Structure formats: structure tokens, C-alpha cells
Image (tube, rainbow, N blue to C red; front, side):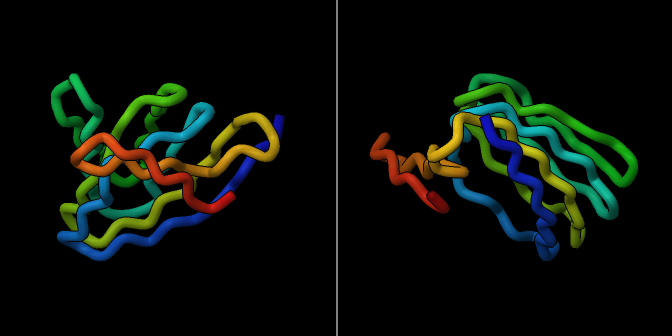
Length: 97
């Protein structure tokens, strides 16, 4: 296993495309407000000081309601891509290997 820790800053109004991770993702919102769009579930809003979990291989995206600063922890098998983009036609594109 490996742990990937990153910081993401997303400008207000930016929408992240649908994707998944080959492991679990844990996110802490350091500032701002973001909406998690988890496929098959209602949208969920997270604000500064809150945290959330995205299950392994769950297809999701996000929209920054305000400028947002996130601290992200991902746990997955070493050598796997950090994320896999899922295009509207269902095609999967591995990113950040």
C-alpha cells in the first residue's frame, strides 16, 4: 500500500470531472465550501473544518462553491494511478500514475 497526501486549491465555480480512485480518499476542507457529487447519492456540501470520505472506486466529482483549499489523503495499492477519469461515454482514462 501507499499513502498519497496532497493539497488541492480549487477556484470558485470550478467543477472537477467525474473520476474514481483505486483506493479510499479522505478529504479535509481547510477553507471554503465544496459540493461532493458521488454517483448514485445526493450531493453533499462540505465547509471549512469538515472532512469526508470517498469509498474505493466510487465515481465522483466536485464543485467549488467558493474558492476551496483541501488536504487530501489517498490510500491504495502502490503503482496504481492516483485517479481514473470517467468520461460521459464510460471510457476510463488513468491519470497521475
